[in-house]
Structures are given as structure tokens and as C-alpha cells.
Amino acid sequence: MGLNITLLEETKPFFRIRFGSYTDKGKRGENEDSLLLYHDNILYSFGIADGAGGHTFGKQVSEATVRALEAELKNNNEYSIDYIYRLLQRKYEQINDHIYSYSRSSGKVMVTTLSMINIVGYRMIISNVGDTKIFRIRDKKLTLLSKVHTVAWSQFELGIINEKQLNEHKQKHVLTKGIGGAEKIAPYFAKELVEDHDIYLICSDGVYNCLSEDKMIELFSTERTYTNQELDEICKKCVSIAFQNQADDNMSIIAVQI
Image 1 (cartoon, helix red, strand yellow):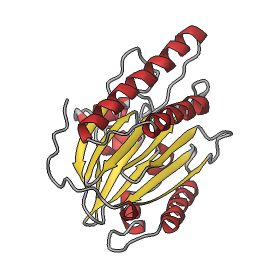
Image 2: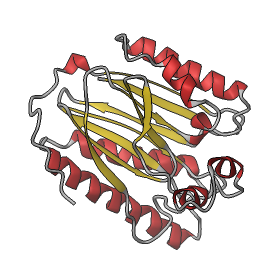
Image 3: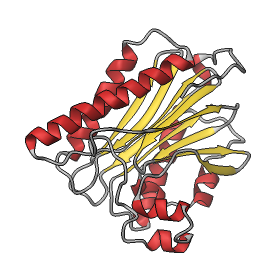
């Protein structure tokens, strides 16, 4: 798969990208979510790795995944969108190989989700494995950009169940894909041309399961420009609302404004 993006070749100035985040363990004993917040004046990379609940070493696996990605990005000095895509594809494979091999040799089940956006100029690569969601808010409309790799969502996409049945499904949290869950990995990749005032949200299931789409649109207005601190505060408010709505999982969110 290649990413042949030829429009809007100019690179956005550093100060045009603003971002905020918040994470909380919620009712769980440990926070198994790990956040990637990396930028170097040209490349902006944001992601959430969510250690799969109920599996061994969820926090360690998500942290190791984020650390490996950040180390790779820090060593990168090539910024063509095709190169970044190949780098990410290779890194997904390397991280999966490492975690899966260690899991097999240790006899422990070690799995994490990973959802990322990587922005160069007006061009963005979306990628994910698992059920951490990536949304875009544009013109007061919320759009899901990532794929949801769960048993229930697969049935929903096939038309076997409806939205109400999806929300009540016993396997809505059972992953069909996760880093470390199988010998081979097939992440979802897509390309996007970002627009001024777009807001991109990366949310773990602890947030989006207990925060309505209408509320997300209300909290994040594309009609104004936020500071990083303001985005941090809104992300914190999202987690607070999710907690009040009986979220029983770790809760993490990253917000990025173009």
C-alpha cells in the first residue's frame, strides 16, 4: 500500500499545531494506557496504547510500545509521507514480533492496542490495531477515522447486529486484533489531508464508551483556537464526565487542533 499524496506540499509552521491530553486509571488499580506525544518541528505524532484488560503486564506492554515508537521517531530525519508510512509499517511489525515472541517464550499473554496519527504539513497518516478510536471534528461533525477491531464491531459492520445490540454485546470489548496477539499483524492504515481548525481526538474505550459524540462536539469547538493548556483542561473534563457516567476502565484522550 502506498500513500501518494501530492496536494498541499507546504509544511505547517510549528506553532500551528496545538495539542492536549489527559489519562487516569479510573476505578482500575493500575493505568494500563500509555500516551505518545512527540513532535520535532516537522513531524507530529500522537497515539494511545491500551494494554488489553485482563492480560498480563498490560502497562508494561503499552509503555514498551510507546517507548519503541518514540525512539524510532527521534532517530528519523526523513519526512516524505511515503517514507513515514513505511517506517510505521515496519515498526508495527517489529514491535509485534518482539511482544509475541516474548509472550510465547514466557507463557504469558501480552497484548496492547495502538492508535496513532502522524502529521507532516497538511498530510496525515492514520493507523491502528485494536479498539482505541480516532475521531475528526470538522464543520461540527464527528467522524470515526480508525477501524474498530472487536468481535461485536465486526458483526455490526456485517449487519448482523444493530447499534443497540452493539452497545449491549457481551463481546464488545473482545479484540480481534492486538499487538502481540498473533504472530502476524495487519494494522489499519489510511491517509488524510488535514484542514485548518480540524480537531482530532484519540480516545481509549474508557472514554468513548461513556462520553457521547454530541458531547465531544460540544466540548471541542472548531470555531475557536485553543492553547495547549486549554486542550489539556478539556481532555481532563472529558475524563471527568466519563467517570461520572460510570466508566469502569482506564480513561485516556489526546486532542490535536490544526
